[in-house]
Amino acid sequence: MSHAHEHVSNTKRIWLVFALLSVVTIVEVFLGIIRPEFLFMNNFFGMNLLNWVFIILTLYKAYYIVWAFMHMEGEKSSLRWAVVATVIFLVIYLLFILLVEADYIYDIFKNSTIKWNF
Image 1 (cartoon, rainbow, N blue to C red):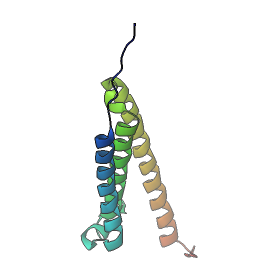
Image 2 (image 1 turned 135 degrees about the vertical axis):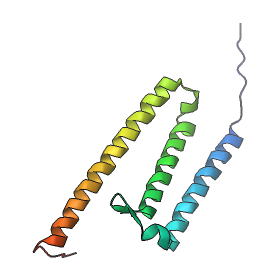
Image 3 (image 1 turned 120 degrees about the vertical axis):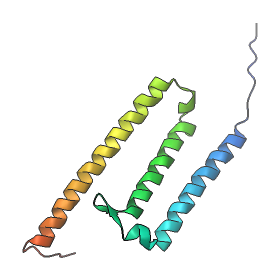
Image 4 (image 1 turned 90 degrees about the vertical axis):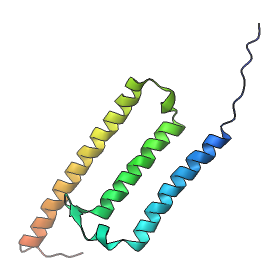
């Protein structure tokens, strides 16, 4: 008894994923080159808004890569949530540590006798 397995081409899906990730990357590069003043000069939680845009777009690309290339769309929602929640927690934790420590170092250099040497 032979079980025939029909091959399904994913060429269209691959090109769609490529196009979406390319557009997001082009937007990131474009924003990095022109550095819009309204994003670059306004701060939110110790970083300018442009950096927040880069972080959000990068996280979106990372999520979409996991979703498309690691086939998470076919998994049960509990597994998807376990993977995504873990990553979200770790990224938020890393950003918290980064922002708190960077602000502390900035205050040390700004308000003390230690001079900027770089």
